[in-house]
Image (cartoon, rainbow, N blue to C red; front, side, top):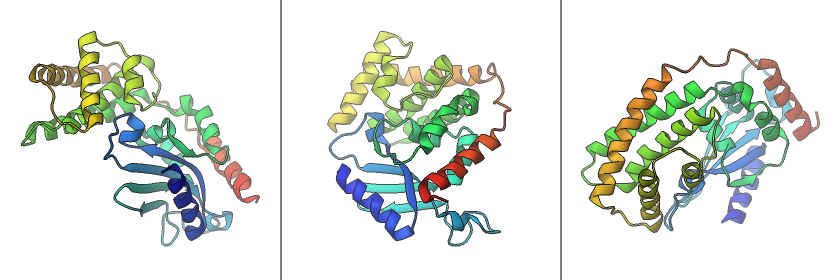
Amino acid sequence: MREIIKRNLHSIEETHQVKILYACEAGSRAWGLENKSSDYDVRFIYIHPTNDYLSIDPMGIGKKTDVMEVPISDKLDMFGWECTKALRLFRKSNPSFLEWLHSELVYSEAFTTIKKIKDIENDVFSAKSSIHHYVNMAKNNFKKYQQADFLDIKQLLNVIRPILLAKWIEENKRFPSVNLPFILENLTLKKDIIDFIYSLIQVKKSGRSTLSNPEIEVLQSFSVKEITRLKNTLNKLGPKPTKPLIEPLDNIFRETLNEVWGE
């Protein structure tokens, strides 16, 4: 599948006359939750030729797309952001973009752009906004889980995952790997909670959909308590970084244009 993904990335470059700076896996495979039926969710960052940026209209208007959706098949979905859009999202400490950066499944990293972005990540990262994002995600997913007509292991994991991400960020003040087993190994949690979450992961990876009622009840209770606690924690955290970092990000963009297109 990796070779199929690489061929499709090359096809995107040829068809749209762009260069792909970075491509990674997102979704269940990046999270360590995949099973045999899981699809591939490829996310990428691309850049247009230099001349496309020399216009009174910014990228994203008309034919100068800053988002690319490329459905390949039922098993493979590819979605990308244009470089300047990605850098603006990075400047805002956007959690979705940070998840791409911290995916352990990387399909392509042909240029130095991502390394330069990671070098200044600590200056951009906002623990408060990231925790806020994941607490809201957990809260909304928990509502969906409660409203479901039947017990859905995947939906319960969609509650647990953002809680663990928020808890990691609370403890470490930086963004983690998105691999859920790795996060579990490095969090301060009671052993029974860790064991029950591992059980949940194994059920998901096996393709089954059942877990014992006591385990479900413990994880539901854990979710409610952690969502409430993390919401209270947000009030104690400091504000976002005020350093604008416009010049360093502009420099990364210009250096990338030069590195990719030689102009």
